[in-house]
Length: 163
Image (tube, rainbow, N blue to C red; front, side, top):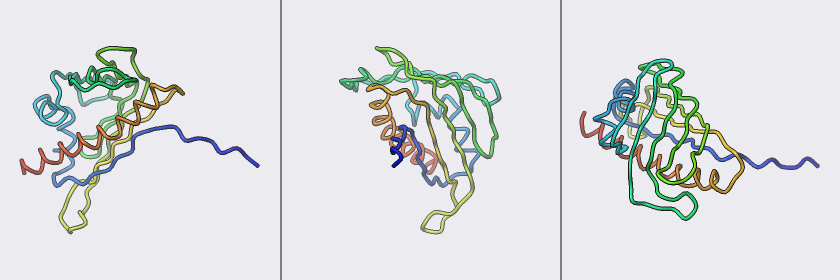
């Protein structure tokens, strides 16, 4: 009998946002928008291949394994399509205290769709992966899944309120 392989933790979250794909994607690269939905304190994001993708944020929330949340998420944009999404490689989370977690990959894809209520929308999918077996990595993915869900909800509210 073959041994069952344990799946590696990762993020895979989808959300419907009633805004055009370009508007959704721009919100990941515009400093003012990032400050409202992430909430980023500083960012350097360049929507082109080999562009930097660095976002800093702070919070008082702490975890017994990871320490204080916030810090910097940084990587390199490898692929960018203004109406379809982007891919960031060599992603590291640099927490305010403690050692970095990475490398990881972050991808956002967008496609036109319809909400369950029949309204036009953009189907947004965020995936994040990369893993080394350790308590810190496992705890990171436990927490980041919920954080992405919360932040994408904030992005949805921001963009739907603006339209």
